[in-house]
Amino acid sequence: MTVSQTKRRTMGNSTHLTHFILSAYFDSRLVKYIFVMILMTLYVLMLVSNVLLIVVICVNRSLHEPMYLFLCSLFVNELYGSTGIFPSLLIHILTDIHTVSVSLCFLQIYCIHSYGIVELLTLAVMSYDRYFAICHPLQYNTHMTRKRIATLLAVPWFYGFLACTVMISLTLSLHLCANIISKVYCDNHSVVKMACSDITAVNIYGLIIAFINISVPLVLILYTYMRILKVCFSGSKQTRHKAVSTCTPHLASLINFTLGASFEIVQTRFNMNHVPSTLRIFLSLYFITCQPLFNPLMYGLNISHIRICCKKLLFAQM
Image (tube, rainbow, N blue to C red; front, side, top):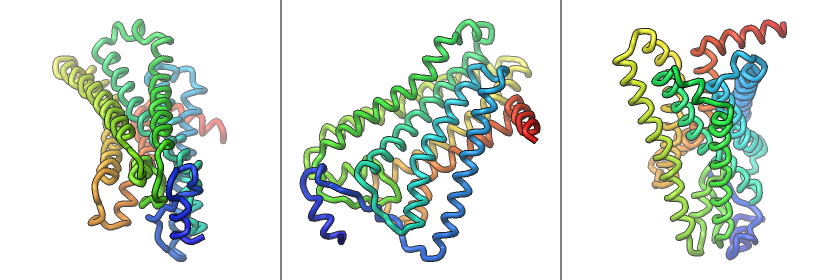
């Protein structure tokens, strides 16, 4: 079936749509095997590093503390997010088939958007945890009860899945007049732009949810770090050392994710045709490919307790 025939078939209600075409892929000929090997290597590294740290945290009772449990949730989310896009990328590059069924496209949208929400909210929860550990160390153990830890672990996932469920439901109700997505993966805004029906409800929901998803976590993070800095400047050298050792990986992770997500938001909302296509593809994939690699390295290398437990686990297997 040709592209023009597909377009004619998909005019009207979105329920008549059979698939979307991802038009950002280009003919890479034999170079595609190099791309596949690079992406496969990155994906295996992501899986191994994140699974290793999850196992280390789960099997070591000494790591069953709030900070490490929140880290475990972060690593699980990165496995979830990277699995939502990497298999699809590998298949599309290797087979030169750049179409995706409607159901798989919306599943990918759900995975990628919920990954982003859970990631930022979990980073906000981790900043709140560090704030209490550094600014109120005497009340930390009584404040961070099992019930509160469970709530702080569950809220990002529950909210992320709920927000994306509503978003997908609104998008599915639209009538689409095209099926070409100018990216290498599916995203909600690209699908909404193809609608030929009223998108007011989707846009209003999108603006509200984007404001909540971005402003609330960032305000919480800024507030907690202002308080942490205040304590560091007025506290002892030991307090400053503790703050630096535990907050540096978190800040680096937050900056890395924020930059990557900002690139994607700008590219989605504005015309970026003046930017080379290869650079656009790299920037659109950055927040979901680099973060799952970056975090295990940052936390695994910088937090001595995790590093020691990793070595023990690896040597025990030899």
